[in-house]
Image: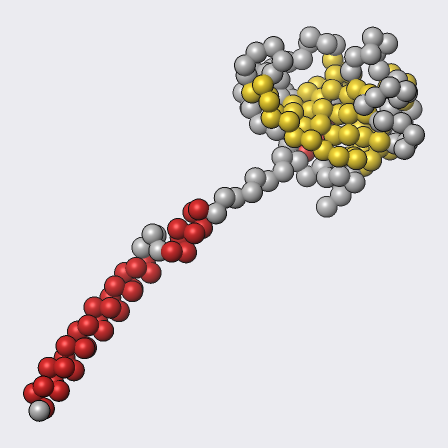
Length: 180
């Protein structure tokens, strides 16, 4: 009887040792369940800028939009003529968001009403373009303005502009007070 008990104890000891070894090895491998779940969980992309709805942009200097109805173009803290945007730096377009909006502006503080990230194909070709549109409002009676910032088509960076890039483009004209 004691021999049967010894065999049984030895047998179960070996089984427990093998099971423990399997558990230890499984926990050490990158294919364990937690790692699989983490790898399958999609990461939400971060917003390209930390300019959020409710942020304020203050116009520092008077601006007059072109009489033609077109936008003002900013690049490297300067107003640039249409067709003169360089490919090596981001640029921003400042335009009215609707009819009846004043085309001559004195220094004023705008509130960022909403932000739209537009990842699309360029107008003139098949190249991808990532444009960030900031809807700016200073007077609830008017539709407001849109500041659209992007890298030029064919630029080395094909991504949405960052807050630093927006600032490097328009900070001579607009002061940013971002909300966190």
